[in-house]
Image (cartoon, rainbow, N blue to C red; front, side, top):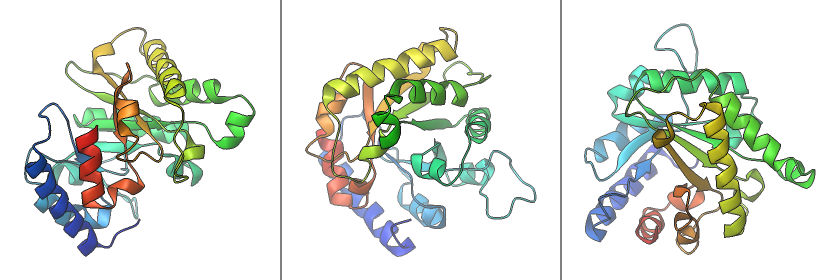
Length: 241
């Protein structure tokens, strides 16, 4: 909840131009997840395969008496292909594991890609609960989830204590945590659908730090917060990834 609709549209136009100008590697996927309010206008800018559209959250049903919610059906009409689920800020506002699990199932049923956020708080890390928290969050998000052939699931490891701090964790620690996320997925899915999984890292990623994560064995990309609010900075980050 950072940009006005007009600001979001201007940044989207700049990003679209810069991505085209920089000739980003075709294997690199750029996904932008604007606020619901600006989604419609931003979707008009990204009528291109160069930049894909995602949402910051969703409701698992297509219609009904759910005041203030946004359905996957309407997101799809706008061209949305990805949905962020379980972001630490949503969890802090009371979102439960059960709610996240229901949304993961609904997103997959609509043949969209869930970006599931997992990660520990500072207190949990201090109490040496990092591994337990991440394993638990992955397992609960994927409980009884069915994946069809060709579908994708993205698990985003975000150490909550570094988000917005300007800090990033050591690349060795990120590598270790990506192994835990991977193994948690293996266990949750009974060793199946391993080709469906992509792991990404999030937490104060900048153009200067992005490559230290994308060069790791298991990490295929990044979930960007503050650096995505400026089209030029975000385009530079994509270029450096």
